[in-house]
Length: 377
Ligand SMILES: *Cc1c(COP(=O)(O)O)cnc(C)c1O
Image 1 (cartoon, rainbow, N blue to C red):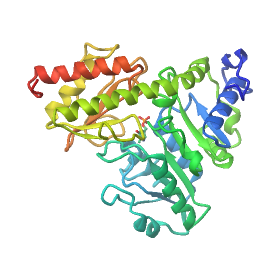
Image 2: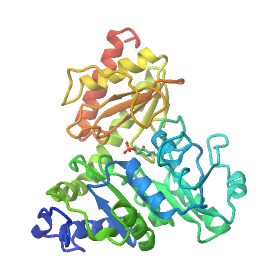
Image 3: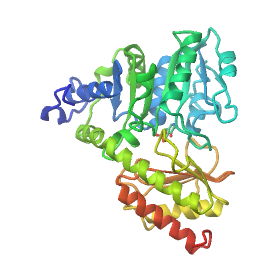
């Protein structure tokens, strides 16, 4: 922020086309600095993490190009984006070929990855956080290893990293260890709980320009996009992001220790080094899972009086339950828990704007499970 001479003038709102939005350009320059990247696209017009990833991928892929996933099936909503699940307007529909290298014993299968890469491979995508899988999230040195492996096969393959939930959990970010593009959501770590909407894409200038041409229109790119008065929240949110993410991690460690104590299978374990803010806990039945999520909802500042129900959410192919009594709709940097209702009934807990709230919310959820007789006090 100091390097970019951030000042009062940058908090002003623009409307309409959003030409010459100094604050927006400054925020993007700050993001580029944080990520040690050439350029950034940070916009309220990016609706979510899925949207940011879609813009980054589709902006950089052309008909006939191959996209290779190095970590098995991607996050549920991205399956529709790619066309693994039939959808209108998917990458598959636009002639992009998709290949996926499944994990081997929970780790990257380097041999299969090498075999999957051909002369048509344009992007290798690396998803760090576990999504709705019971697997380890990728630490920064593991990201580095995959990127080096891919670049050794061919230097011009674009290494894309889905960085959702991992920002500021390590000193380094994927762009520090060779990633060409990386993307995520502002209602997760980087918005610090203050950004009311948004997504970011950072990386090499050429790839960011390609993404911008897709987000707005070819020929317009980064030049347009009004910020409508929310820049102060986006900028101050970034200022809070490291502390808020640290609170969320502390809550995750607390939940991990508590549920391990009660005999549940947890990932990661309480003393493990973490790559993201997500805590996975295997519940023993759908009823226990729903009870836990309702408990988290009960401990929320907003909508504490409602009981979440599993529901057919857009982009997911089985019913999903989401507890999120959040100030920003669906913000999972706020204490939240979600799960697809399918075996092994893993619940994914994350967030906590303050450590104190994370702790209180988790205790309230555990108490619900004690009352229902799932946990023996
Ligand atoms: C949250 C998340 C996304 C994007 O989800 P949105 O709800 O669209 O923001 C993508 N990948 C991973 C691994 C995620 O955790």
